[in-house]
Image 1 (cartoon, rainbow, N blue to C red):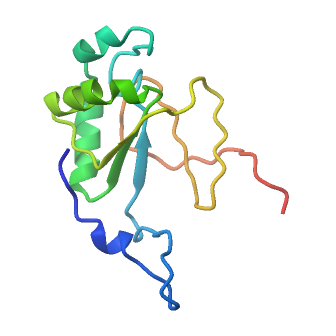
Image 2 (cartoon, rainbow, N blue to C red):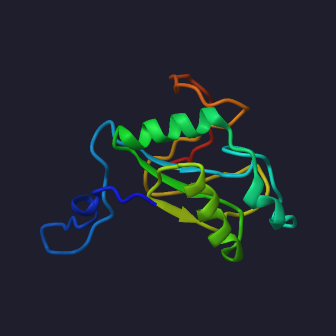
Image 3 (cartoon, rainbow, N blue to C red):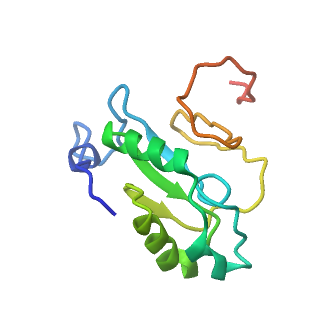
Length: 144
């Protein structure tokens, strides 16, 4: 895993000296990216022996490394379990993925509805990494 200098952002405190959850500067994004079926072959946890030999999606590697080089934060967020961490890190490194963190244990299954105190944008992967474009869609929000 290649380190990226985010220390100053992560050390922010409010006026009273309390730690605050950092807000990234304008234009900088914090990408949470699935692994199986998004950057490589879709491999279920029940077949971990296939994880070491999964085929990488070349457009994913190129795009994500470009985002990393542009200064965005890359975090892989996968349904793989902790017991799959080492093989997952080896595979990511072997294929040259640049990233900041790896979160294991994402809930399995689709139809996610993310609730957070920070702005969340979601993009469904449909088979190819391309440039992101603006698109107006209908979403569900709290009635406040």
